[in-house]
View 1 (cartoon, rainbow, N blue to C red):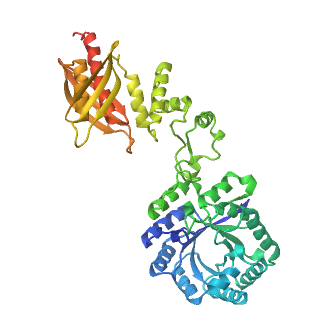
View 2 (view 1 turned 120 degrees about the horizontal axis):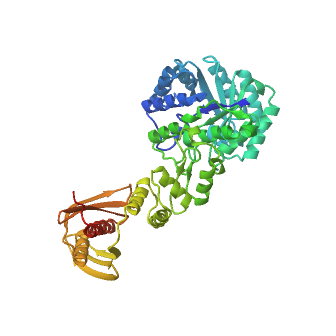
View 3 (view 1 turned 30 degrees about the vertical axis):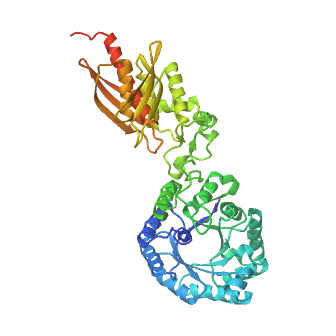
Amino acid sequence: MRYIRIFDTTLRDGEQSPGASMNVEEKLHVARQLARLNVDVIEAGFPVASPGDFEAVRRISEEIRGVTIAGLARAKDLDIERAAEALKPAEMGRIHTFIATSDIHLRYKLRITREEVLEAAVAAVRKARSFTGDVEFSAEDATRSDRDFLCRITEEVIKAGATTVNIPDTVGYAIPQEFGELIEHLMNRVPNIDRAVISVHCHNDLGLAVANSLTAIMKGAGQVECTINGIGERAGNAAMEEIVMSLKTRPRFFDADTRVVTEEIYKTSRLVSKITGMVVQPNKAIVGANAFAHEAGIHQDGFLKERSTYEIMRPETVGIPQSKLVLGKHSGRHAFKERLRELGYELSEEELNKAFERFKRLCDQKKYIFDEDIETLVSEEVKKVPEVYRLEELRVSSGTSVRPTASVRLRVGDRVVERTEQGDGPVDATYCAIAKITETKSHLERFEIKSITGGTDALGEVIVTLEEDGRTVRGYGSDTDIIVAAAKAYLNALNKLEGKKRVPEKGI
């Protein structure tokens, strides 16, 4: 199986994402985690760009061991000397020098000829070789360069001492088949290609960075340049985690693998996201919040019977503790029952059916259903008391310029009774109306309210304590509408009081 080197450029190209710049300590923190991830090369920065970048490369070179540290340099003596100085403390240092090779860059950006580019590239590689035996050359905008010229410059920089030659898709222009043909062309046309590792560095402007990188591997590339979470300029770079796990998941297809400790992937992703402030989209492959989450009932049923029906890799492989069965409106009874079992509930078939029905109603009200929501639903079902009073309808009006008013309709036995009352607030008005209908003589001793889960659509829980003739009961109610939850809690307590009245207290 071929060994593919992972060149991580999160700290250099990834940091070029708007708003993602890192200070020296943050870069050092990420570099330590990249070392634990066991990437082959960490491109720590562009030393000539700023004093901060120079210091970051120098500090990382001093501390990080067992990993090659690279510094970027244009094909200019000053850049190369600055990179060499920053990399001096490194156990293994690499100077990565580059110059554009496409005619569009030569004409509009550099304003020089192909021969001048060739001369500058060879001189830069020789200069870098005077400081280190590990030199990488990049032909910027290679995918839009003339193929014959690209072959020529590749051959010459290898002669000059480049040990790695990078073929970047700088502007994300290439299509996988086309990019594969380019790498194959170089492998067949450059006579000394076997003396260097061919690397690829793909941008994601067309969403093809990972596909292009994997195609290049199949055609002979031995190194892939990528970033954590795919961050980088414009639409970003090839995502390291996607490339690594593609090789890991399909070994027979690629016949290639990396040395990355995949169990560190998720931790690294979260660290980079936290430091850069670039949030990982939920449906992001490998590290997104939904990457190992299942909500559809058919998927959940298959997953519970055999994980491989809907998972091609185990979450533990990338450092995620376990898959998630996300309960929502698309979930089925099988997943709901399984989650109840995990939470410690064993319900009868009738109780399960009622709880599942209430769960489905809640799903229509909330985007996210949490374990706490489910526990509240089930505890209400399990602890259900005979309903002497049942809420049929509740209408409330309240505001800064109106007196809070509540209209409550209750079913009392076989009768339906409605009452409208005012109060100091919507809850007080609701309780006044309920008290008048039920003619209760109980005293409200305690009223507690809390949000069971986060968000403005959270399921709210209300707990009330009522006392009447020495009997004390607690009532529970939950709903996304806190006024409704309060009414449910009050009625639950009143029903419990009625139940106690009908069952004589046991003597001593």
